[in-house]
Image 1 (cartoon, rainbow over the protein chains, first blue to last red):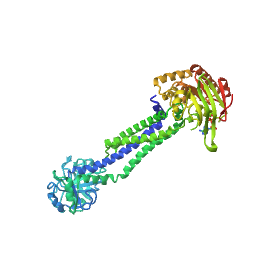
Image 2: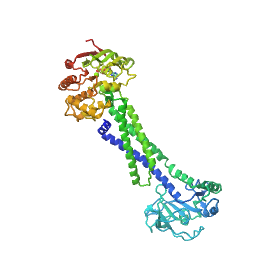
Image 3: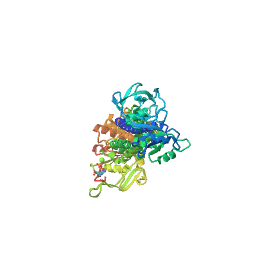
Image 4: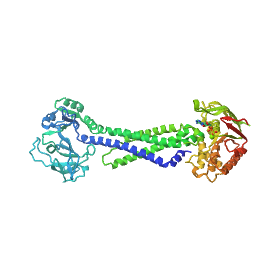
Length: 376
Length: 224
Ligand SMILES: Nc1ncnc2c1ncn2[C@@H]1O[C@H](COP(=O)(O)OP(=O)(O)O)[C@@H](O)[C@H]1O
Ligand SMILES: [Mg+2]
């Protein structure tokens, strides 16, 4: 009777369903947390990669762009325009600063990206509307009037012509750019570097960093390390910058989440093990009888393991599906990595089956003599 | 007549030190083919322990056991094989699997012995009809009376054509009418299958059905 184990499971339906759902929820949470972290990694990279810059130049001692506090004076960086290994005139000033604009009356988190149109640092075109007006001077001149205009992330839901408040000044939305949300769905506000300096950096001639392209023929790593040797600046390649940014914005703050994922795994394992064990305790008499009437340990083990494997398979598969549903419905950007989710599902399956197996092994050790006694 | 089960000097102790109980004490017993033996004695005298030894569920501390002429050596043999191939069991508390129908409960015994499902179903159908349960194939144990459950147990015990059936107090949980019916069923089944049966009971009234009565006291068999 190939279906013996199924009949047993149907008899204990409620418990089987609850166990399966328990696994489903735990697995989907494990996958969802992984998806959140993966989403953060994707968002941590996407802006940085979109700039097309090969080297990232920050103030000496800042620990790198995006990591520590970095201010450099653009004028002093003029030497980069003829810098060894760099594409001539590719060095671009960049303000990258956290801000809290008021959007439709609500204080909102955002990152202001101030750059020079036509140079590196932000989008070259918009999806809708137009680019902000480019300041027509090259030097820092705070007294010059510049229109306060911003290009917003399309996902912010703002309309062209709307105004937001930034550092007590009204800034008009003139265009929408392709979404490049930063970590945890933080929208980017693109504006002219001069306005960013004026509104966010206290009207100083500083920018946060310079970015530049390297000559195709040279190794970015070599150029970066040559430049880094200079006293006043720290220079990192794109690759190093991405590593830094992911470590700083994702991996370090998410250590607790990683720990939680391991705990959830443990919980899933304990859940299956415990419920299998409790079920086995209830079945002691049945197992004893099966053994008494000639069931080998292998036969009884097979019966129990088939149940464990079926519950684990269904639980894990449903968890996998549910995690994608959760991901789609989540209020933040979640990107479940398909291959990773398959690996996680496999590991979860092994954890569940393993603990079920341990419980089953304990259960089949029951003495068949129990069949002669009424106890338990 | 061939000897189906033979135990010599069988001894089983439980516990250790001062608390040691000698449940079965140097028992010699032989059961012949087609015989119906009744094992009687006071509660705690070792009846269940003895049939567990003879039925290869317990291993003796001392003594030897032959079943169907073959010596049993628990050190090298998997006793579960002997139990499913040569022995049938009937328990006082029936011990049918609650999630299976009468038919499936009989089929399980054959499933243990890896009998094909269709073959098992045919035999289970036949056996249940023989024990008078042709109307109860698809009933679960919870839907059967005590007497009916015990009939299913006998059908299950017979499933693998055992050399001997051990029944431990099969009538203890039945009323007197049910227990009389069961005894007449056992007689019919013996006619049909020539099965050897050893029944443990303390119902004096059942004695008359036996070919032989074995009396036990304090783990020993009394001379008859
Ligand atoms: N597993 C056990 N552990 C300790 N003592 C046991 C065990 N099984 C049986 N005994 C003891 O062995 C004796 C015989 O028991 P049993 O064979 O069940 O008697 P009966 O079936 O005749 O009532 C009793 O004294 C009982 O308490
Ligand atoms: Mg007893």
